[in-house]
Length: 182
Image (tube, rainbow, N blue to C red):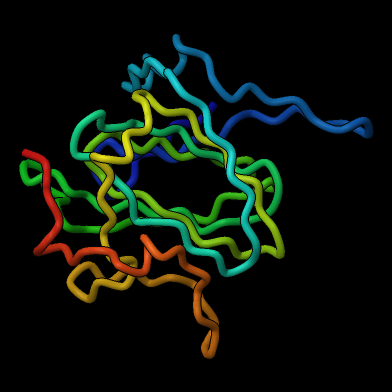
């Protein structure tokens, strides 16, 4: 497994070793000792699975309490996965980073607590799985505006296409309005 640093402090792009032959493939997606050696000490308490259609944009989500670290991956399709650093003490505060993850490249992303997270489905359908270090707490959930100009995320959305948003995601707060972490 390769653990690659990103421009956002604590966010890691993970390239698992994939063993394939004419029958298919095998890969290890989690092993505590390997992740700990890479500086990721996570105790997962919840697994989630979402299926979404093309141009669905989910995010940018975070929780003010029960903050969640997330290990995300795609088992079918392709998504553009994005994080925004909301930790005031971080050198990357207010910045975003994104990567294409898919069932073909098998990449995973570690998103530590204190970041807003979202994704855009680029394939006709995508299955998105993520392990969380704390429970989902709707009362503590906040949404950063996916299109906030102060953050400037460059989503790979073709001209003329409007992303499919939930009502909650269409009402996201700006970077100046949303609660932040120390």
